[in-house]
Length: 225
Image (cartoon, rainbow, N blue to C red):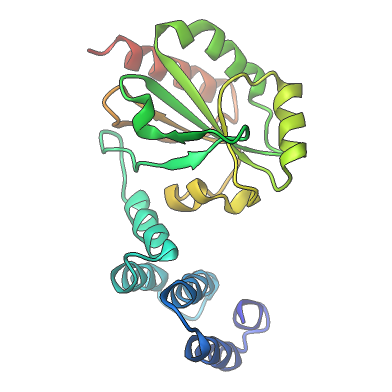
């Protein structure tokens, strides 16, 4: 349906498919999932208002607040409006080693969340140096491995000498936290202060200037009372 609507521009056929699937959905989880994909489809269409998909996310979050995709839609809308100083959207996930990890577990730490993938892990040497320099002063790095295969993710972590926790759910770029936090490019970074507030909502270390900015922001966050 998404291909029909966005590539072949056969919107009526696509909507008919979505309608049929919604009518046959038997529970709220299935219905919420369909609304999520419909919103994704709407976002890619050029024949609707630019923010139409945001209204669909709002409807999804309000209609199915207890469903998984309803929660994702709620967090995604919040993420799109966040700025420095806002409270970070909490997460609770599982690491590559199978251990549970939540943002609340890192209370009192300066937290750098690193979103990376198989072809987007070039920042590893810089991060290893950050970890060596600042871990003892209160910096915690948390990786989000946007890789599909667990064994491959493990091998990449070992090869890059990442010694910090790696969240992993096997969903690649569509990993849960990336969807909730609105992360759409890799690698990308989010810096959070000791009080759980955003310092840098979306940092991209594309050049030396970006790395210098992030290092300076970490130093300020570590020094703040």
